[in-house]
Image (cartoon, rainbow, N blue to C red; front, side, top):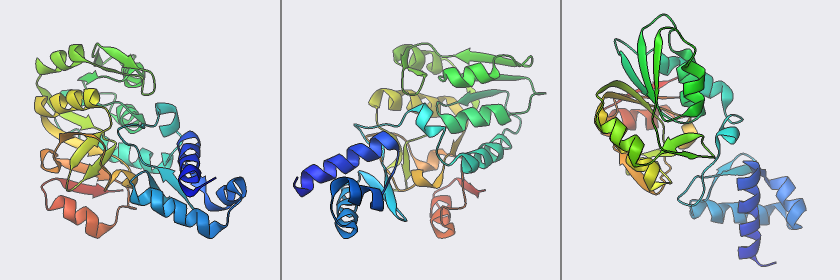
Amino acid sequence: MDAEERRRGMLELARRAGSVDVIRLATDFQVSKETVRRDLGALEEQGLVRRTHGGAYPVESAGFETTLDFRRTQHVPQKSRIAAAAAELLGGAETVFIDEGFTPKLIAEALPRDRLLTVVTTSLAVAGALATGEKRTVLLLGGRVRGGTMATVGHWAVHMLSTFVIDLAYVGANGISRTHGLTTPDPVVGELKAQVVRAARRCVFAGVHTKFGSASFSRFAEVADLEAIVTDTSLPLPEANRYSFMGPQVIRV
């Protein structure tokens, strides 16, 4: 097995399992830990994985996107804190968009139950979490359901959004960077998210620190389009300040 074939195998394992560690890879591929570290370093240079202490995890890209089930298992305490802080930014909003994903679902569950709210979403999970609330009206956008994320996309959803004025949008992204803005692997999803940003008076991005500095294929918003960014304290303060200089308030919890 040559180096290229070995690296493809490591990447496939990372995408299947969600993360890999150096010791296990050294055993599986019968190479030294130093060789594994070099291989992971090469994959990181290609933007395919992000190194961690003792291993690596896959970076979402144009050809790879994690599922909702996988996202439920990663950084759960941080996502819970982020969701609670994001929900506190509701203010006087009466119409709210909540994006697909696990963190947005947590935001939906953290919204006050005693407020009259109209919630627009593409997420079946968000709609299910909110549908029983007596003071909430839930509008699930129509379209094709993506099996991995259990969310709708397509021209029906984009058209419906184009007829709305939304007070506050909680948007997610697969990556956010100061150079490329907010990105997602699928252009169809990017088109929908771009329409959300156009329709909303206020936009809040909520996501864990691993999203920062990453860029996927389809850009749908600029950092300056955001009113606030909510993330965890593992995003270094100097880097958080660099994002705040671009316009949004950055909240680390």
